[in-house]
Image 1 (tube, helix red, strand yellow):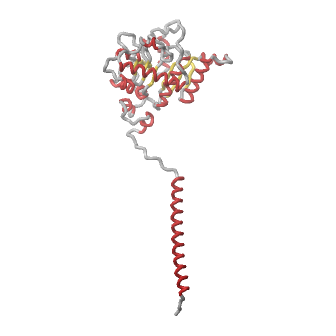
Image 2 (cartoon, rainbow, N blue to C red; image 1 turned 180 degrees about the vertical axis):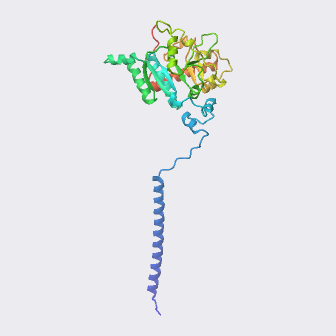
Image 3 (cartoon, one colour; image 1 turned 120 degrees about the horizontal axis):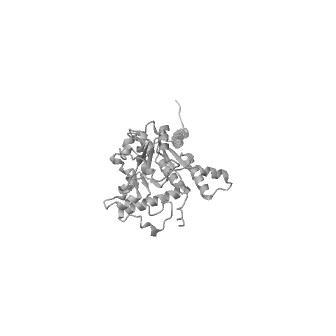
Length: 336
């Protein structure tokens, strides 16, 4: 039998209390340390991306930047493609003068932005390369054109091809590429077809030309040219027009000059949302590249409010894109 003094009992109790509290302090420190480590690991470890909803047609959603069902053209392109695939078709822009280079860039920038799968080609005057080779100091306009062509090739995946331009080149604005891509899937009734819109009281000149290149087509076109040289007058009017156009396709092409004939039921909002390509065709004024005085616009601008709003909007979009993409202000109106 062991007898403990009061001092020994007090020391035993004190030691036990110290041991218990030391153990609790250690455990609390350990738990806090583990929580800190887990927090650091969670912060350092990259988080998995949120799940992406799978659309009914992922290819269409990827290439057209919007879910299927946006329009008739998206639904059609979900199950149709050009013969031979998208690598066998291309948008081509023919440039005849320096003032039209920026417009070609604007069109291809929109095709790139909306992820059109067709190839892209710019046909520019071969004499520009000859001028560059023969001059140490380039003309300012030629220098700008060459800069823009390099930008087209680098930023918008455009193939550049020098040619001797023959047909007139106009200006246009792409609003939606799906309708234009749809044209590549249509059956070709001949090697060259035109798409046009306009009044029945005027000569119908195609704003868009569909061309299926081949040796036979080249020989056919070459043999149809006048003897003794090429004449531009009347050539575009002779191009056969595409006849098999679905009802939905009326919104593929529009002309600014036709807005003057729209009535009060016209909606500028629907026009801008549903039209694929707008051609600037106001014959009483210069093209949208020029800084036209307000006093001269009255002859071209529509009178009714909604057509007038659409007309002003496409011209203003053109001006903004010209500055944003090409870094160019509007051209001064040339002296008469």
